[in-house]
Image 1 (cartoon, rainbow, N blue to C red):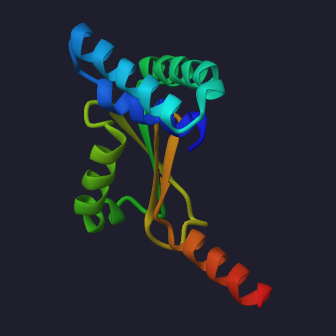
Image 2 (spheres, rainbow, N blue to C red):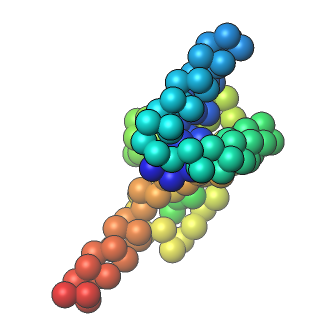
Length: 132
């Protein structure tokens, strides 16, 4: 695993936990990292964890990129699930209309992005076809 993955897992696990539980989780993470022989990653995990914490604390909005406003209703259920995945339920939603977005949507919060646009799917399909 990469340091960012460890840090993200630690951040998600320690969200809304007491100091005692956080201490226990950090101790467990250190043991896991040691058992896998990744002790040198500890410094980088801490750096990434601090970066994630700062980024999440300063986030004030959830950005939604979509072709047209009426599509918000179409994708409402999927959007809600992805917003929960990002842990961005309480953030102010800012909608950006993008005519190049063929269909689907993209959301960004806390420095993370979920791209469910048809544009991304078409580009991926094109790259797959052209590489064979």
